[in-house]
Length: 460
View 1 (cartoon, helix red, strand yellow):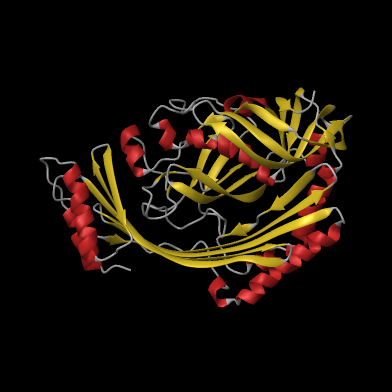
View 2 (cartoon, rainbow, N blue to C red):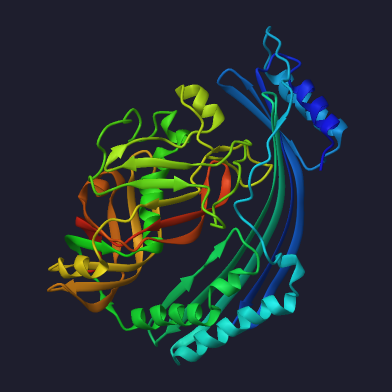
């Protein structure tokens, strides 16, 4: 994208007025998507994104500028403009590049761009037909395909030079079931840092039928009772509660500002001894994986909580300066328009020793949240509320009738303490996480677990 000599000149210009750190991030991204409604193509889009961002540090102060004009002349002008905004009497020089060759953790066998659009559309059509055929109650289907191919370059004044090709592919399906008085939906969105081999790993028709099953089941469900009682949260996307209510509070973005309930808690017990939580950006072909983060630091497996004890935060370069903490390979951004900051990659609660059958059997009465939906969180307090997409009552240690309209309400730090059973069936699911540095792909995950007491909003 940019010649090495051009990058050298840009970094040198950025250091002219005393910045003690300068960084260049450049990207070229090709992306495409197809969307179908009821088996017919509604949207088909493709695009190319090119641009670069320049970031300067003056101690713990930072300034960021970006442009989609990637000429050397323009980027030098932006670098000098950022440098002029903050000045120091001390002058710093650029260190020699240390170009690192990082092992590929996301091997791609079938590049999406080498597969015909007609084949991609056929996967979506098959999914729509399978969902529609599941039940006459299915009145609408939405299916989608997304492909992203991104090349990134990160270079900084400390000598870091890193480049990486990133490919991601995702399939989505939503089925809507309707009656005379209401509608219910079910959806899935499997994906990964992989190519079209995604469709060898998943069966689009089975996935579509499962989405239809959820929609039809919930259409006939009774309203969920309200109250405080045990809640069993299933594996996979159930991990969204930890991600939102606790994970964001472990990012240095919040911790450095003392805007997290977990600030100054390192080494202290913050959860049940059954809870171990990990953020791992090195899982091969996982949705949130990459060989390096968006500051050029190698990604890592970071143990956040071990047996209930807070072991680590997720730390980016700038907040690491503020906290006096080592960086953890956790700095991410949506694209060149955003300055990077600490973000999760693939975050999950580690498996325990209980089987799902044991967890259900040990629960005399409670709610079984089989599939989680969306929700909202206050990162400063960890207070959250999440909708249950598919729920069932548990009676006498057995899964009983389906219920709809359930909402899980609580505080992340309190829920961590109230986890009293953790299953052995870890599974991950894919999502998009929005925060200060934009929307990024992340995996959430957990085994089945039980919260001993939780507020459930429903119909009393």
